[in-house]
Image (cartoon, rainbow, N blue to C red; front, side, top):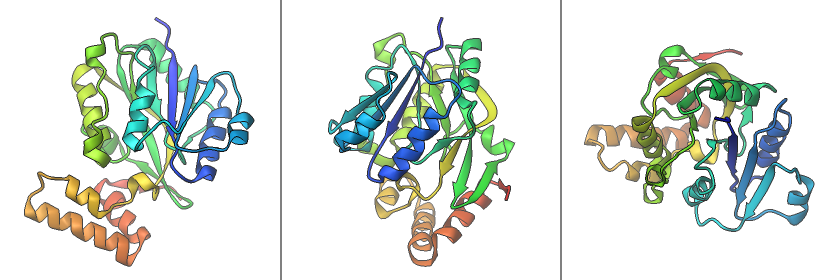
Length: 246
């Protein structure tokens, strides 16, 4: 079986962040088989500038973030799929090569790969106990294997909003055996739209106890009133036991 890799980037807003992500893909020693960018609006000259055979733009077809991610799922049943968020970059030039090497060894498994967290110019490396957790974590790296049967083509539940990817990932983890890539592959930019807490996020967690709901509200206040820096230090770098490298 050939290990074909498709990368999908969802773009919402900041075009400079998208350029950073696209250039990261183009800097790889080996290109993915397909690279799709889904965006509500992009200038025609921008799409023309990045006119590569393996790249495709889908403009103005999505209604929301997770609707766009579902659009990215439609043509991926026979390919390995990974999402690379707009603003995120590959850790080095060999990451796609590393992914393909792992996929060729065990092509029918899910791969969870290591993600380096970046806040401004500071990098944080998750320790092994964080990486070894099979449960959903805030910044998972996840490659879905080819899906043979359409009945197993789980879509993002758009009504779940910001926790849709959590449920999507858990559904696949139940279905396929899991392998892990211990090499750092992606640098995730903390502070982006997907990681900023808000009241809507709190309200989505419908099954929280009163004490946990209070904790979520306090996190929201720290972020909004005090500072982003304190929020990320308190939430990510202590709770998930991350290691600062610089």
